[in-house]
Length: 332
Image (cartoon, rainbow, N blue to C red; front, top):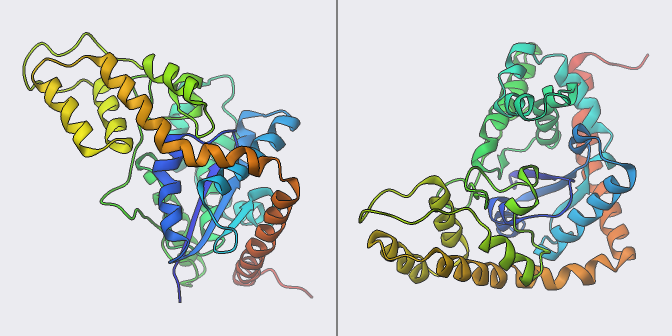
């Protein structure tokens, strides 16, 4: 029996290189080897209170870009989270066994409290519980997540194991982070600090749908410094980020060339950025070319979404029937 893989991307609009290299590249390899569920997390996006038109448009954008990136709806299950009502019901059950202290210790929750003190809603607090429900609803054992999501995955194991202990069962298997490469990938942003992401500002991320002109402008504005002052000195975070991006999209010889220049104090960041931008354009070209064609085919998108919902509900409803039975919900 094939192992089950689950992964999702929040429906907050366009996909960026962090999504592509942190998750989607793995998806493409996994869909032939595993029982894969790839979902669009529109429930998760409600913590930011999107307008109705934006919510639908964002879901469509992610679906289009999933397909443009190469996810095959005949091989894998691609679905919209809100099309599977069993997920929020399992979320409710898991919330009954999640404790305030452990949710408040979540790194992502603490970060949100600091960054958006006027919108510390209950959805943010219980975000890890909904993530757990997304995973264990299909009894997944592998989850291709980035380095920054490891704590959420640990909490998913905690909630599944707690359910098993409470009801003296071995119903939920333990899900683990999974990458087909050597290690989990964290794709840095262009702002010189943390990871690439939509929440860090429009210019922090390079999107799969960005035109070559936009990519060049964004990369040339990426944070850098005045250059090294000693040979072989350690790279500061902002410069290391540029080199990490170069390692993702460029030839090894290109990376080595600029690394050597840095170590000899001969580097010109303008040249590095120009090369990085062109390599990003080349890396994203096949996806970018397919996005417009797929977006224009409404009938195809409807068919994909309906097929995905049907396949996802078949798995989710089976899990939920058994969960309700284990808990003690029975019809008279």
